[in-house]
Image 1 (cartoon, rainbow, N blue to C red):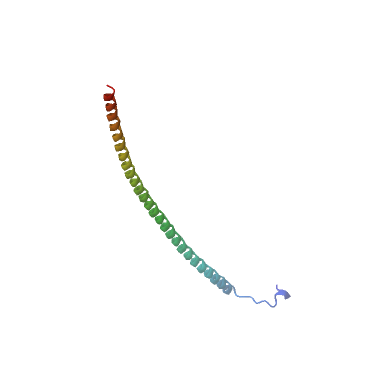
Image 2: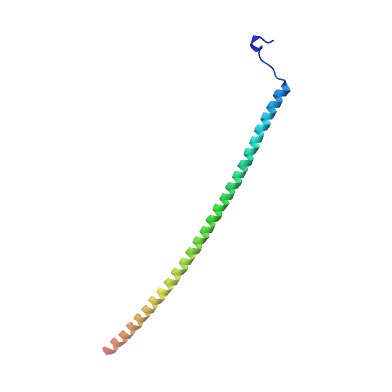
Length: 109
């Protein structure tokens, strides 16, 4: 059955070979489990970072919105003040025109 080629070989019992492979598979399984746990932690950390960035963006957007509203309110107040001044000036000029027209009409009679 065996030639001279296998004379120096020693054969291990099948249960020993089987157990060695079982131990190797268990060791690799433990490494896989550890990697799964690490990846799970990384996913949770990444999700937390995403939530923080999203929250920060929302806060900055709200700040910007409040700033724009405030600036718009100030601009509206300035516009109202200038329009009021211009309307008063226009009214004064209109009154003066009416007075001058009346005066001119009286002079030409």
